[in-house]
Structures are given as C-alpha cells and as structure tokens.
Length: 227
Image (cartoon, rainbow, N blue to C red; front, side, top):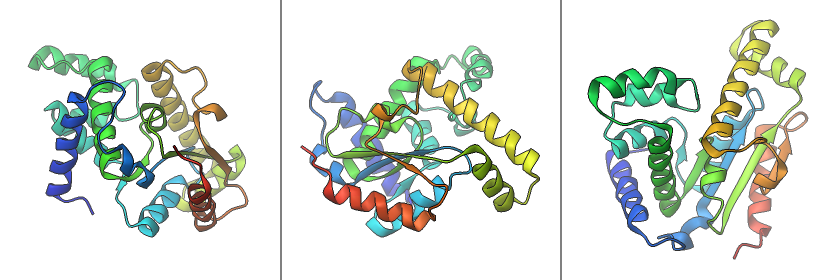
C-alpha cells in the first residue's frame, strides 16, 4: 500500500540521488530488496510482480510510478499518464509544453524517471516495467527479470483473462508490446530491449503458473552472487 508518506519518502530519496556524486548511489546497500520485472502482454507478469511483493513484504511499483513522476516533475498526472511507456504520448505532449511552458521532453522525462526509480531503489521494492532494468543496471544487488511467452499462448491467456476474442487479444498484444518496444528503443537507445544481456533471469511462462515463476525468481535472488 502506497501512502502519502511513502510517496514523500521516495521523492526525498530521489532528490538525494539527484544530488549524489556520480559513481555513488545512496541506499545501495538496500538494493537486495529491489527486483525489476518486465514482461510481455499476456505472460502473467503483473500477477508475478504482485506475488513477489507480497512474499517479500515490499511495495510494488507499477502505475504508482506515474504519481511519483508527477510529483518529481511538478506536472499534471494526467499528462504523464499519456507518456507512460508510450513513445507516441510525446507527440501530443508538445502542445501542453507550448501552452504551459513546462518542458516535458524525452530528455527531461528520462531524467525525472531516473530520479524516481533510484529513489525507489534506495527504499526497496518490486518495479514493474518502465525500463527499470536499464536505469538501475549500474546498481549492485538489483535482480533484473524478464518474463516471456509464445505468442499464441499469450493470446489464449489474455483472451480468457479479459473475456475477449482471440482476435481482440492478438491485436492488443501486438499494439501494447510494439508501443513498449518503441518506448524502450527511443528512450534508452536500445535496438533489442529483450536481449538476454539486459537481464539476470529470463523465464518462459508458457507452462508455469505465476506462483511457480515467483518461486524461481526468489530462488535465483537467494543464490545470486551480488557484490
């Protein structure tokens, strides 16, 4: 549960991270409580993230990151929601910038996102998406996980979960994953956002329930040789 005090605490830590000298990150010793988790649509990744946070007794950060970004950037939350993991959001945001004088360029967005995620890293948590595996790659003791699944399996799963047709599920997966891929590619200058080198652990969810995937992640975390 994210209280006002939690948001204020993370914002304070983000400000501290912004002021810190390069090469040193405050609270890095607490990073054993940080797991970044990215997942394709229909892989069950969000449920895995929820299970992990509950078992570890730490917060899950997903849409909550938008509220933290709004506080960090002093911007309207509704504007940032349009930018959330969607590169095309910047195409409409220019009008807001023009009318208000607020700079919400990709560069400023990335800087604020970095501050927020480093603030979360100081506190600990499960971070879902937002390119956290790239932003926190230089921090020791952060476990970076990616969950994948074959396209047809993801289509079947999403169709069942949302009670939609397989055709609707197929289109939703393609559109959502493409938007996320474009977002990562542009924001982090990465041609292959799902390349194994960007993660410590990649799991195929085709034949594993979310609880079992969480088991594997926790086991990997326990045996990981962090600095």
